[in-house]
Length: 177
Length: 408
Image (cartoon, rainbow over all chains, first blue to last red; front, side, top):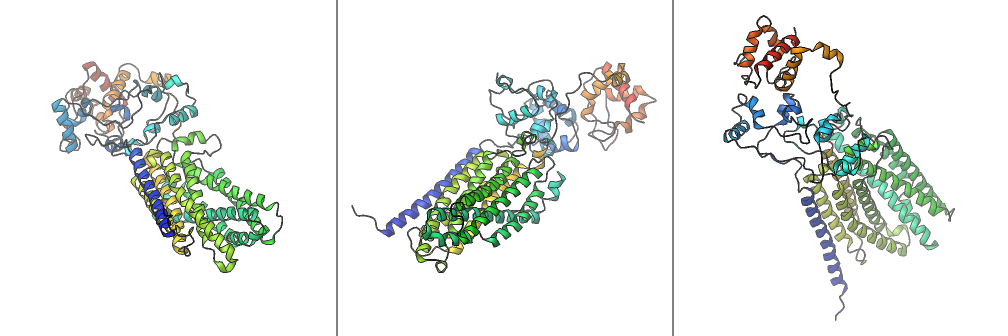
């Protein structure tokens, strides 16, 4: 076997160095894909603007999310709730027309869920709203969001941090039944 | 939140980024060169005393004075940026960071003068190491502070305690800072000119510095990936990934430039490598800054400092209960459930303010009931009111409530 000379070694070293950074770039791309696998602000079938309803009109959250203070789920409003106003308002707008087409076909709107919790977490809106937790504590300023974005990590550490701060129970069975 | 708006002018923003780059690069360089000088002084034997003196000369009094000036400026600027009412890193945090930095710089300066005068040989390493430790502690506080900033939900926990909380992303930033500091130090040492000291020392410095820079550059992407893995999702954006990717490419170019050095083939292209080291600090600061911009949007910050409201009372207070009795109380319940969707008494919502329209019905309550029962378009400025789903008894109650509640 012929021992490699200096020039060969140097070429080899440079190749290895370039390879190291190429792998790092690939890992970066992979990590980016992994971290963005669930969009923070998923697109919705109808571009419902919270900026108009909760922002300009100042409608209260619970007027549409009627079950927030009396059920585990805050609830997306039934189309009938939308139609109380949109029977007569904004009929010329494309998004309102989409809504009315859904009503005409008697077909519910398949909203994309923004806040997804794992199946082993038993979260109830009722308890939190009744304990006086403001909607913005977990949802941010929804009234300023044209498309709703998740602004909290929804991780266990985050939940527990808040539970500790506010003196709420931290027993496992509180959230994991 | 007002503090944020005032402090977010683009020029001020650019100035802060530049100041932070200079700050981190300086502190990194002081800590890095001091580390190498302590090692060479303690392990190199009397033969390398000249080299240790030359290296620590890089961290001489001028540098300390400069660092001092610039540190004050930087921290003032950064302080404005983060002067948020609920922000955890207030006075205590900045005082801690500054005092640690000051103590570290002083000890490193003392070490430099001790090497210069060849005194206290047995105490020198301890003084040097203590100084380096304090400098690194200051940098860690700064990096960890950035990590806490990116996790607003952690603030309530930090508040009652020490106003400081180590985070994984902050620790990652510190690891990045260490890698870049050692890389810059290596570059500086490898380019120390031969005329200043012995030829043998110069060759040693070139080899040692070259290897140090190369290894640090290779390690940096690992630290950067660790940071990005631990940043909260809200802090990430394509700009953050893009800046980091550009940094990886730059570091790769630097490593290839350095690759000739360990083999001893020609002097390294000093200026290009120095510019590159500075640029990598720029990448670190820019990535951190972009992440902070993403995470600290007003919409995100809303609710972070909202204290827990007292639980809503189960029954209204006696005074309120006495005021709203009978039919009007029933009417209020109907109003809250149905009408308040579009109406307020004092302001325009979807419909007109009720104070402007209801008093007109005082003489004829039946007309009000008839309108609620079967609304018609009255004012062209508003849409036609939809027919509410209410019973005759509820119409009766809500009309009574409206007439009682409306002003004048």
